[in-house]
Length: 121
Image (cartoon, rainbow, N blue to C red):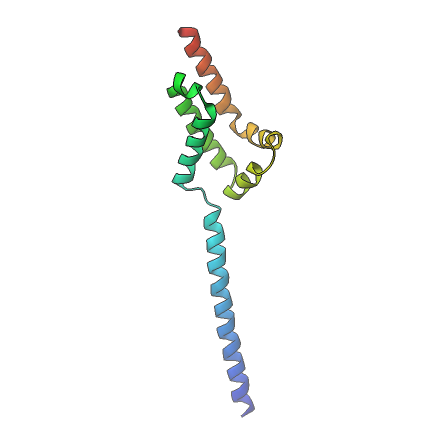
């Protein structure tokens, strides 16, 4: 009789562990998916970059397109989505300190491309 009670408790505990394991897997999967960059995220970053460039996006359309593609790739390769969102919530100075080293090559190429195009005009 006592053995039967212990078996029931063990069975319930085992079922409880499986349920807990399943819930943990679901939560972990959800959290990891929200931290992954998507193609839509990259496109949104690129559009934001083009908007931030302002008038130069018209005068230097091809150069801006290349710069913003580079910017988007650099950001998504350099930071997780959560890290990026955390940095974006900070002030401009802190953002520049974090982002500039990651996008510096893109920025320098953009400056050079604009200079070269202006020199040829």
